[in-house]
Image (cartoon, rainbow, N blue to C red; front, top):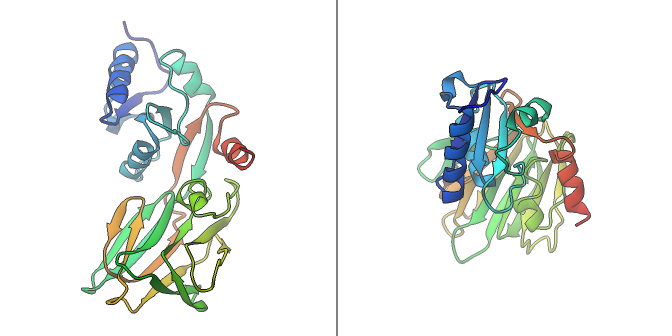
Length: 257
């Protein structure tokens, strides 16, 4: 027999067996609601599926409550089929804005994609990439020789950025982190903190000899010539967390782990 939810909830799950089992349990217990009628989305899976869900629903003004059926689950809450109505009612909301990437490839085509975590440029050949970095139309670094570079949001600062020794950003901060991967020249360059309003442009130098690919949350563009990135305030992702376990608290814990 179904239990009552105060809000119409649409359950979405990754293809992982654990997530599919959780989907069957929750729908049997709380019923099924079509996505177009949902007042809240419950995403079942890991962080990767959470990102997929947010991207798939970025035109909907509907909060997403994730429950971890994956590995790390940084963006997720602990899985439990019990007390879901009270957990949804008491959840705390965090609003994040994604990055928007524009990238031109070798054929002159311009590709656009959104990234909740980061936009990264990665060398796609045996030689290091050569990048020129401009911020708000001004050249800030004539030449960065590296394996790659990325620009991340506060929400994504504990992901690829942190692995590349970039800083963890407080979730409410109005800044973006620009981080290099294996910088060769300038040697051991530590990156930069930029205003959230900044327009960052990477120009690929010697692109034929040193090919570079661009990636926005797993959406890749090969052989890019230039990439422009900025925050997109018009897109708002609403993520729900259990009280005391929101993104701000998780970012603090990561820094003292």
